[in-house]
Length: 118
Image (cartoon, rainbow, N blue to C red; front, top):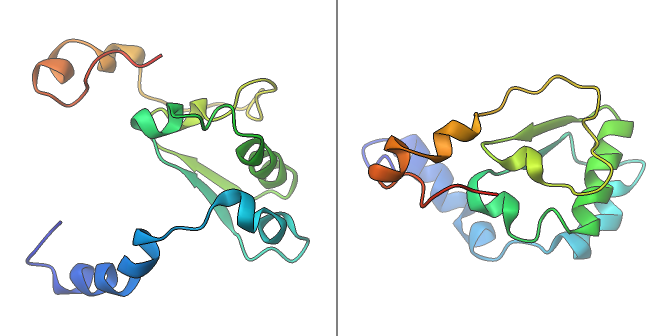
């Protein structure tokens, strides 16, 4: 957290209550998938978060399918593109991703990665 950046700290404090109690996707799924959805994009974080039951989530699959069908932006970070098993919503698209080689070697040595992610 950049302690010297007052603007960032103010934004963080504004959203801290929501960050501490995030909504469950299952609870807001009807609103997300609605014809008048307030969502303009889908963000999937990377790293271990993308591999922690997210690929098996039917709700995440529905959101990704909705986003593709409704031409919404989908942003994935790091390993986020692994967020759906089965029919891959990005088949036929070109993806820019980190190579598996970054899960090894120096990144493990410096503690950035605990080891190769599946």
